[in-house]
Image (cartoon, rainbow, N blue to C red; front, side, top):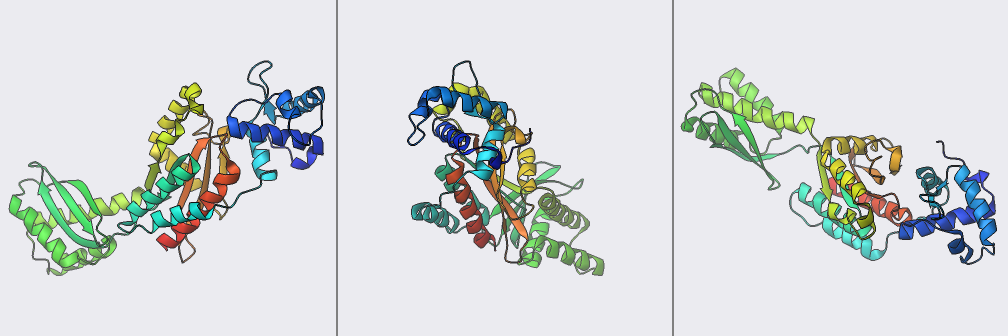
Length: 347
């Protein structure tokens, strides 16, 4: 259903709709006419309020989950509120300080991203998400540890101290000395280079006959570099923090929804695709409930914003996922500030 423009609602309908949405976002419970009648400044009888609520329901903005249970905003109603009525609140000085401190914590970039995402999760009471392309590693050292006759563990250490392991298949009949030879060659020859630069140098040296390696060690060097390069090209980094915050007192009565949501978060490739769709443009994207197929069953909202490097290119997307009744006015500016902070980190 298309969201009607806010201008189609008269002042009384807007006032009543705002009270319903504000109350629902605060409590998660349907709102009755008596509660609205007590709201300051409305001066309307419960009967008049019920008539307006019926009109709002007919427009698709409100719904009643049970007979005489009051009403709550639909996904369409929440979209109208977010786009046309919400008054965003700036992050406090303490909230900004928490995010900046986590981003500036030092260590490998992935650790800083994870820490910042955890801070965002804590401040928003949602699960925090960040998606970035696999960074171009600069090599410090590479070694190989035998696992079996047919496989070895390739251990890569980058210049920022990050350690990554990959299992590589060994050429038939390779002996342990070839593992040592391949590791020594790569560490001595390729240190300080990116993966792309390392592959180019190995290809040149082997083509010119300058690589002092036997056939088995040469094959292992090529396989080791290929594994890392292909992995970096295919898979972005998706970090999820704070899933436990999705299970709060209000969610206890709706554990099936939370279970669906946690199952969705396990499908990281699909989540990455959703965040990647938010990378177009500069604005914050808000997906409410059934507006997004991935989280339609769990009735969840996603707030996501891209962030850019110094060259203007999008270098990642950061956001949160939580129930549709999350505090959009507070959370959207926090996501915006986190995106700006990560842009400085990744720049």
